Image (cartoon, rainbow, N blue to C red; front, side, top):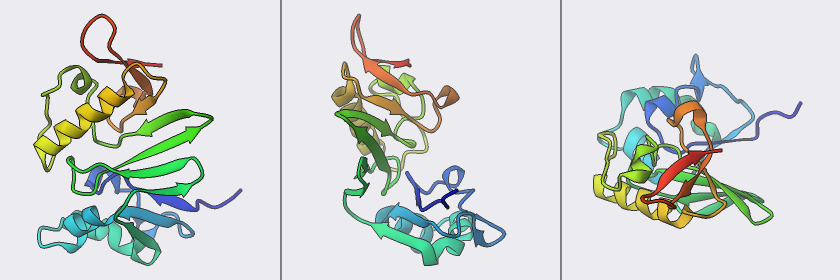
Length: 173
C-alpha cells in the first residue's frame, strides 16, 4: 500500500485539524501538509493565534507547504482560495472528463444556507465575504452537474444545487 503523500486543509479550525498530529508527531509521516498562508498566519503564527491550533499543527511544520494563490495539486485536483469563513479557507475541486466535485469545507455549514441567501453562522470570520462567496458558488453550480459536499452536511452528502420550482435547494445524490 502507498503511504499518504498529501494532506490538504480546507481551513484551520480545530475540528478540522485535530487529526493532523498525535502525541506530537504527524499522523502521516510521509505526507506534505498543505494550507493557505492566510490561515496559517491567522491561527498559528499571528498575534491572535489559537493555542489549540499551535499545539496540533506545530508537529507538522517540517512537512508543511504554505500557498497563497490558487494552484493545481495534481492533475484533476485544484485548490481555490475562498476567504470568508476564515482568511485562508480553501475549496478543493476534483475534476475529470468535464465533471466536477467541489469540496467546500466549512464554506457552507447547513444545506439551508443554499436556500436562504442571508443565513449566516457565527463561526464565519468575515460574514459579508462568507455570504457573498457561498452565494456565488451556489449560483455558479445551480442547475449544472457539479457535485458539492461540505464537512458538516448530514452524512457528508454530495449533492447538486437545483433552482426549479423556486429558490435554490441542495438535493443529495
